Length: 118
Image (cartoon, rainbow, N blue to C red; front, side, top):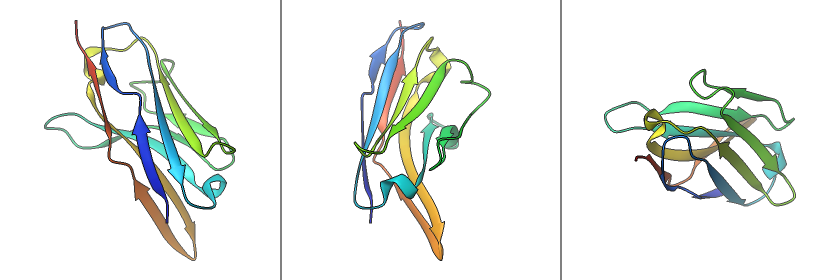
């Protein structure tokens, strides 16, 4: 069992920056692939950034070059550094942990609100 707690959301002006954190409790954090997703009002949840257990990353086209995902296995935490924020980045951001060993393990955090507004 893994519990995920996001933090770092808030209100930021366009062009500003935020750093989201997702702290995990439980065992085997380093084996999990971690992702940040977001859901804006009236829209489906979408993948923003993903980092594998081995450290490989991929990003949605809309955030490529602006957002950076990273992980610290010793702290059992995954981060999302968000720069050059735009109005369209406004959403609830969710952390996800996933791995498949014999069966799929899939956990979600409660989300943190990011609002980009002037």
